[in-house]
Every structure is written in C-alpha cells, then in structure tokens.
Length: 535
Image (tube, rainbow, N blue to C red; front, side, top):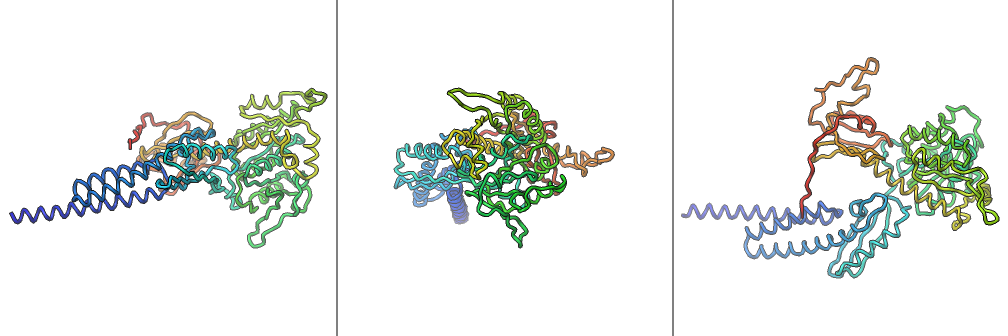
C-alpha cells in the first residue's frame, strides 16, 4: 500500500510538472504571437493553445491553479476577440488593384488595442506613397473600425513600404533602392516623348512619390531645356567614384547635358558605355519611380538600357499620323520580346479647340490602333496647346506651371495608371513562381495569365538547359535523370526581370528558369487541397 501511494505521489508530481511546463510554454507562445504582426494563422495558433491548454490545466491541477488559468484564458480571449473584431472590420476594405482585402495584403501594421478605454490605433503601410486612393483607405479604415460598439477612438496613420526593387540582387549598387523603373518611349523623334516623361515624373512627385528622371538621349538631351535646376552640372563623389544627381523641385535629374559636354558626337558602343555609366553609377538614393526618357529607335542603346536594368513597365508615346504608328509598333514589339509590359499609350497633339469646335489636323486613330493591335489597356490624349510647348522651353513643366489645367488632369490620370499598373506588375512578378513547402511543389502563375499549375521540383531541376546540364556543342544531356533526387527542394526562388526566375538548389547551383520553359514542363495532375482549420 505504501509503495502504491509512493508511486501515485510520484506520478502526480510528474503530471503537475509536465502541466506547468506546457502551461508556461503556452503563455510564452501567446505573448510572442500577440507581440508579432497580426496574422490569422498566429491568431488560430494562440486560440488553440489558450483553449486546449486552459482545459488541460483545469483538469490536471488543483482548484487554485484552475482558477488562475481561467482568468488568464479569459483575458487573452478578450484580447483575441478585440483584435479579431478590428481585423474583420478592416477586411471589408478591398484594394481595387489587387482585388484582395487590405488585411490579406499585409497593409495593417502596429495594431494596438486598449479595450478598457475603447481605443484602437494601427498603421496602414501601402505599396507606394503615390497610392491614388490612400485617402480613401484612411477614411474607410476610420469608418469601419469606429462602427464597432466598444470602440470610442481610432487613430490611423499612413505610411509606405521602403523603396526596394523586386530584383535587388541583380542591380548595380546605385539602383538597389529604386522600386520601379518606367521607360517612356516612342521610337520616333519629335512626338513629344520628353515632354511626356518630364510631366509624368513631376506628376508622380506631386502624388507623394520620390522620383528621378534619367535622360538617356546622349545625342540630343532635352532635360536641360525642360527643367531649371540651380546646379546645372553633375558632381562626382571622389571617394565612391559615383555621380551625384542634380535636383529641381524635389526630383533628381541626370542627363548627359548636365555633364558639361553638350551633345555627344561618338559611335554607338561608346554611347552605350556612357549611358551605362550615367545610369548605374549615380547615387539615386531611395526612389519610388525612376522615369527613363528613352532615345528614339530600337538599336544598341535601347537594348542596352533594357538589359542593364529590369524595367518595370513602359509608356508609349505617339501622334495621330500613320508614319508615327509604324515606328511606335516597332518599339512595342521590342518591349514585348524583352518581356517589358507596356501599360499605357499617350497620343500627343491629337486636337485643338477653336470657335466652339474640335479639330484634328493630323487625323485620328493612331493611338487607338496601337491599343487595339497590341492589347495595351490605357489610352490618353493630349491636345495641341501653346502653353504645353512653351512650358517645355521655359524650363518649368506644364503640370507645375498650371496644376489645375486640362493637360495636368490628363497627366494625373496617366500618373494614377502608372502607379496602379506598376503595383500589379510587382505583385504578379513577386508571386509568379513560389515553392509550397507543405505540398512540396512549385506553384506557377505566369504574369498576365489566369492559369495556375504545379511542378515537381525534381522535374524543374532536370529540365535545366544551361551549359552545366547540356553540352553546348553536341546537345548531349550531361545532367542525368538519376543525378537529381526525387525529394530535392529549392532553397530560394527569385524573380529575374519579367521573364524568368532564378532557383537556388541545395548543391549551390543557380538555375535560370524562363516562364516560357516552365509552361512546357510536365505538370502535377493531382495536388492535395489543404482544408483550413476552423478556429
């Protein structure tokens, strides 16, 4: 009997020790979850632990500890319910660009709740400070949270994500804090491309973005005429051997015309080298948008620009004449081959108004033809205005000289379009190819495609077409089927421009997998569907 009592006593002590340990771990996990960013998965884990651990403790421990656990669980449940209420309310706000609620987009940060005082504070971190609907987000967030019955005061602060490109590892140091690089191109001289580039840049700056302009026309730089910075010469940082851009009205500027050399007289390869140096060795700092005023044509210079930096998007400028359309079509095809999305067409010098009538001196339809033939989603018309031309010659952009005029409204609409399309492209590219660690498969959803499919990692690795896997001379397969284990998993997947991803494998090999090649690989037919666990 004594032995039985001793064993029972020891067993009871062991149970109490294990229960106390689990209880402590549960509280630690709960605190950790509450201090981290608010996510639904963290809430589910916390609720599960609080409920299950609370019941375990109350059944295995004495009345005193059971009462204590009940109080802890009740307080935590109250906090969880308050956070859940706030997040459910904010989830009613849908981002029109992404088609997803702002909670799922990860915009809600620093959520703090004082339920006793009825106070709620949080920060909405948007993808860009130039978000055209940031005021709407702030207003709606205040409204939906204020409607909760226990909320008395709501404090919403707005911010934007730090400037960072999707392809940071592939960029020169000077461009590694530039979020979006937008090319303004026409492939035809004299259609107003520089006018559009400069006014677009200052429109984006007026929307709250940090902006820079790079004038890539070495033979005929336009930027020194269209803006009037106090310092009209680029400076060099002697220690870093980098270029310090000049500024005008808060926009950073780099042009060969500011190098003290005027217009270049040199051969193509030298021009490409100058453009590369000006663009990549400049200390741009943190920029949300770098607008590149592309030179006319589709030759070495244009290809160099597209290959040196991964362009986020392109804006095409044309005029109503058929001759302009022919050259513009070449440029659109060039961007298409280089996998650079064209997001808008600007048809310049479309019309003018006189005597109560609208006249079209150069005809109509070139811009519409570009949109219809190449599927570019947005078209903007610019009228013939003496003030638009005069502002370019005077050194003050039209959107700065007359911010409420008709031309400025057109550029505001163009700016909104560029911001929205760049945000969509960044999201599509960053999530195009991802590894699902739960089902052990690579998920692929190519930008501008509604199709989503899964690939086995070993299949992707075996289909590498680089010189390490295939003999370049004979075409003989050097990487054998059995060389790749079936359970291989990628260590990292990173976007490579808008056309491919770089996959790092456990053996240190970096595989470049173009989207076109991924679409031709053997797909997984049966993919397990994960059933969400109800809280």
